[in-house]
Image (cartoon, rainbow, N blue to C red; front, top):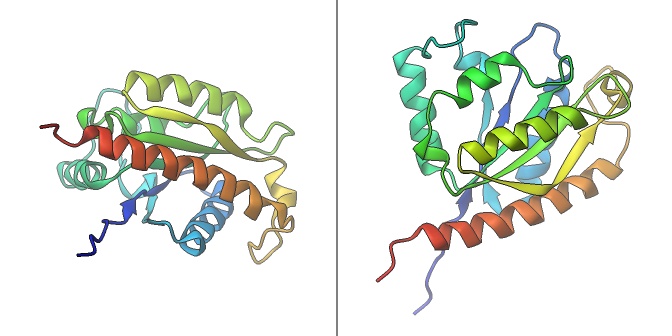
Length: 190
């Protein structure tokens, strides 16, 4: 008898809702690469579809909150693609992450940073890892940094540097390893 393993589900979340955001190009590239990679099922998510308020402490609209909760209950991990603003991550991403808690527990988090500068969101990635730990997620070591994003993509939104495909494969490999290990560990014992 052959046992069919359920395919992992790891959604990709674009962490900014700003108009004219360059991070959207990077997020769509990551999503297309994840689909080609094929070792997990994915879904493209956008903070602008969930967070309708910019006030800290206010909940997301009930329908969006339930949708986010349901997605993360099903998820075996999460991959966030987000820009760095003033050395941190966007406020709307924080509002969205703070909406739920238990749904994240013991699931891996991969992060792709995006910036107009040379560091590709490196400071934001480090801050977001600390938040992930508090949410009882497991931030993985690998990250992909989209530096000088305004020069990295052409006018059609196509990436100019093909090495990013290899960088993402390395991140995906680590994310899948943790997702499989933690999924097994979360299963009821006995």
